[in-house]
Length: 463
Figure (tube, rainbow, N blue to C red):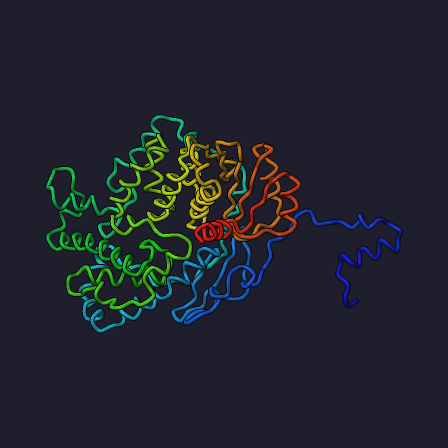
C-alpha cells in the first residue's frame, strides 16, 4: 500500500485489534548502515581535480570506508580522517609520479640499479594489489576485557626469551640488509670493526658494503623528500609509498638529485598535514633507530616495564609516526598511572586504523580537559580506553565516525566501570538518535563532533 511503512502498518493493525500502540515491537539494536558520503564529510573532500569519492559509504565497525577514484587507480580510506589525508596527499602523489617518469629518473634507475636492489632484498615494494576483504573498523575496542600481556609470560624462561627477542638478537624479525629498521646497527657494523658487532652482511664483500651504505642514504633521502612534500614518510598510501621508494632509491645512488627534481611543488608541501594535525618534525629528522631511542627516553616516564616498552617500539603495528604521536599525546596528558595498560592495549592493535584510534582517543581527552587533564589516570575498560581526571570527571573518548546502537556498544556501556555520576563521552563523528537517547538514559554528557567543536572553540577565542 503506497505511503505505508511496516511500522505504520503494525500500528494500524493494533488499532483494528484494539491493542495499545506500545505493543509495536521496537528493534533491540541497530544495524550499521550504508550512508551517502556527503552526510559524513564536507564537499571539498568528495571531488576535485583528479579524484572522485564513491558516494556510497559503508559503516563498518563504527568507521566509514571510502573509495577514492584517481587517475592512478582506486585508493581505499578506512575512516574520515584517513580520507582527508589521502585527498591531501594527492598533490604530492602527482608530483612524485611526474618526476618518476622524467628522463633524468629513467636514466638513473637503470638495469644495474634494479638488479642490485632485487639481489639484496628488494628495496622497492611490490606493485599495488587490489584490496580484498572488508575491514572490521574499530569494533574490537568495544569487546571484552583483554588479558594482560604480563600474565602470558608466567615462566621466567618465557619472559627471558621475549626479552632476548626484543633487544638481545640484532635481527629479531629476520630483516635483511635493505630494511630501514636496522640503519644504526648497519652503520656500526660497517664503521667500528668490533668483533661480534657485525651481521652476516659485513662479510659479503665490498660491493655489498657499498649497497648497505647506500641503504643508509636511501632512508635519509626518503625522509627529506617526505618533508619537502609535507607528507608522512611512513604513510600507508600504497601509490605514494611506491613512488617515494623509487625516487629515494634513485637519489641514493649519487647520480640523481631527487630533492632538486621535485622543482617547484606549488601547493603540495604541507597540505597533507593540515588536515588534522602537524607531524612532529622528528619523524623527518631522525632515522628509525634514532627515533626509537628518542621515543624510548620520552616514554619511560609513563612506562616502567622496559620489556613492554621495547615491544611497543619494535614489534607493534604502530608506525614510527604514530608512536611519536601517541607519546606526544601522553606528554600533554601527563597521567600519573595507566601507561603500562595503555601500551598493552596498543600492542593488541591489528591495523593502522586501530593504532590511530588509540592516538586519537588520547588527543580527544587532552582537547576536552586542557590543563585539567594533567595528573589523571588512564583506564582500560573492556578492550577500550577511558580517562579519570583529577577533578572526578570520567571521560570516554570514542574517535569514531558513526556510532550505531549495537549489542556490543550496549554491553560495553553497561559495564560496572561506567556507573559513576559524572561522565562524558566524546564522539569524534556523529551518533544515531537512538544512540544518543540510550547514552542520555545512562547519565552520559554527550559531545558529538568533538574535534570540530574543539577547533571552533579555539578559533572563537582567538578572534
